[in-house]
Length: 637
Image (cartoon, rainbow, N blue to C red; front, side, top):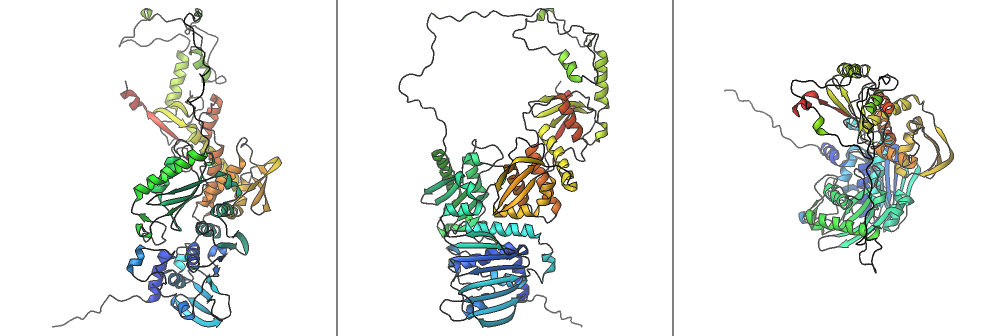
């Protein structure tokens, strides 16, 4: 009898492999490294922290602090998995007061990068330098260095090429670096921070108050829009600032929640803030806010997500009500809302009719000469005067009063009888029926089958309505114009053929450092749209020219919105940024709802729309037109 002895198949992974797996959760991009190391510097009691970034962090990320530093043994042990000074036992997980606690950050970073650490405690004469690459310690020696820690992380994902190729462009990675940097500095105004990008200083933030720190990060302009929030209950203490209702914008707002000194995302609490602004700001717009929660550390769970940005609260509904009430109180206290005061002295000056007063008689003015069915043989439809003249012919003009119609004199229409029309219009109605039948019968028809002479009218200043082969087509005029302008903007950026309309008195626009990073990377595309900008230094730009056709639009707000739309992009494909710029400019420049269009304007808009490759939807997927089919209309009758 043959016995087959099989080898065991379960085995322990090497530490280097386990660290790389852990790094997949902790280290996602260069900004993750900055977040972890700066938080460690804060926990170490640092008062001055410098961050130096090269090539968006892909080549080098360096964090220098003046904290307590580490001994030679601690420096070596810090790169081991689950080695930490923050917690001692499991109960500490439910009462966290530090930023980091898992002991995975340094081990994960060292597993996917080349790390050099120089550290010294204030009481030591010499410091320690350790070099690690791919979890392997290459050297350790004593060096002369300042007290504190100096971490240098080079060539991120050098040993994991599959992950390195998924890193985005330098501009996109730097955008993420600045975003994480801002989240940290906004919650620690008592610490001095400095950020360098390729040797150029982007932020120099001295110790300051919270309001001054917000101004230093986002510019002086935001100072006038901040309203203080302060409330304390048995559950939570809220503090911070919210924006005034008039400062609302569609894009580019700064919205931050912090709990116990830690940044968090919380859609539920965000809805509480937006609920307080209901009916005070236009639909679809947002306001900036910087709200800080102070709660009992045992009432929250920060270990929900590896990046610790999603936090669970024990009393979310109660805190939601406190937050909404606090925001409403601040808005009512600091914003001037016109009120009607009924407690006024004396009586209001309202004229009152006397008992003997009479209203003067206003005689009716009747028109007896008007006949809507009067034959006008000399008034025929032609392609030059358009269908609006045909409609005007059979439309009763607006008179002050119109003589009542004698309904008894009208002959009812029986089921077997066809409607009778004046003798001068059957040819015109036949022409209309021909256009109706020959018009494109489905939404996928090409522009070549679109007939601009089809009768059309505007409904509520929002929709263009006209017949088509399968029913009635309803076109959203704003979205149709967005699609047309978007295609034009993309062509202009592609060929750089849009002229710039020079400004007689150039204006100065101030951009924050994050916007400057995006702007410098897309200056060619913005110039292709027709903007002529000159860098004056310090985040200031001179607007020497603007695209023609945007008169009446605030160029400063438009540029801020365009950059805000690009900041949210995560792709490294330049076309995505171009489309974001083109769409934002198209949405700002398109005709607004309520704008009255002439028949010729509607014809041109529809013709341009159906000449585009995708006339059915806007670039962001919104429906442009729909068709109400004949069969649905028949069901109503």
